[in-house]
Length: 615
Image 1 (spheres, rainbow, N blue to C red):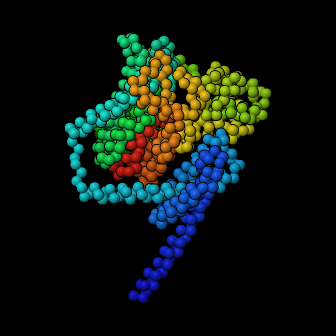
Image 2: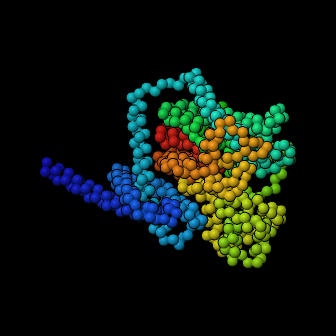
Image 3: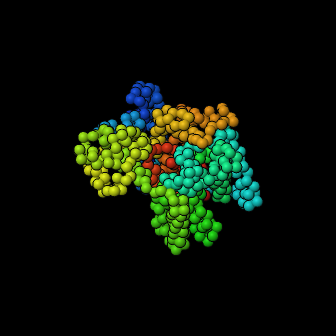
């Protein structure tokens, strides 16, 4: 008995020593994190807002409690979990430290010692917190499984499911209709006039996807011919799009119900789709983003189903046809969709080795259909295809920034070469957050005549000013990965009926030939403020639901959790989203419309994190 007692005392003493060490380490990390915390806050050069305030003490106490609680309740020997959480936390911390400097100063100064001190300290802090969050998700899922084992889940009735689907579809339409009346005939914006004019004038180009150009312009022209009203034509297109988007969301709700996701999550998803302003804005917007993202969401669901129920999926002709239709539609409605899709092609072939022949046939069918339809439309409508600006957005912006801030990097011959493709008046329009002013005056003919000449110029200036190039790219992309970004990329630009000022969050506009004719002015004003003012920025926590960068990191940490849990089939849909995100950070600017899938897919991502054993 004495030996056992001594052993127990020795174990207790050992545990006590470990606990003391962990608490001291926690206090150190919490202190360093609190000291470095202002480095990831946009304090407008007024550090006293944080340092000379009781708020900093509260942050320290909260950090210390959270860190110590985490270190004493999670497995310290789980190397895999720590490595994955650490890698994500490092990237997140880097994004925050970069972002706050880009937002405040317009560039990242790598000589700033505070950056290099804050990076490891905040990475350690966030790694511990992320591990605790993942541990919480795991325990919550375990409790759910234990609860459901004692309750007989009701079987799905196809008749009841059909009625529920119809009800959900109608709910979405009814909830969106008042907003359509308020902003009547809808948000006819983001190159809408250009797309309509192509159809009206029968003069086509491939700057915008022809599938969307023909759909948008065709409906407007057809309805205008019947009613002599452009507004009715625009409204008809918006109504058709509402039905497509509502059908997509209804299918997602049905899919969640089929997978026995809790009623609470499904109801929350319905309310979110019905009322959240970002969803409503883009559902009622004529831009191609809503249809593209709807097809993208259906493709994600198909990829999940393909991974979860592999045998059943490849045995079902209906499932395969639905997968092909979703993929082809996605590719046809946004050009960068093809680049994102190509990324997952080898992954699907490797992962589904059992059905390699079938998956190869399916993928070939998708790609062949896309290229055949695109080529046919281009040929039939004699569309012009002579632009290179979209592919060269980043290099153009890099040369323009370096020319403006580091002109000494160019000798006389370099300047002469540069002006052949980018004249002086174009370079004078350089906007750090928006490539369009310079890009639109790019000389395609000169570039096509001697590509290698301009490629050599780009590399020559890169060697001389690499940080200028890096900052040029960061400034057009940081809104996609920095949660606190104020989206004001069009500030000062005058459009048809207003001038952008504090916010360019959404293009609240009705381009000609449409005219705004609101039936519910107060609701119209509410959406105008959300689009063009900083209303959503003033609401703590909720503001992150409006942030592309905030949702991106939510998506990243959920994907990291799936990887940590070795749910590899779940990672294929996440990889597709990541591939799309990688294409847009090489684009001309940052706008929510380019990453709309983060909003459309949020209920699916959330359900996967909260009820991982079902999805």
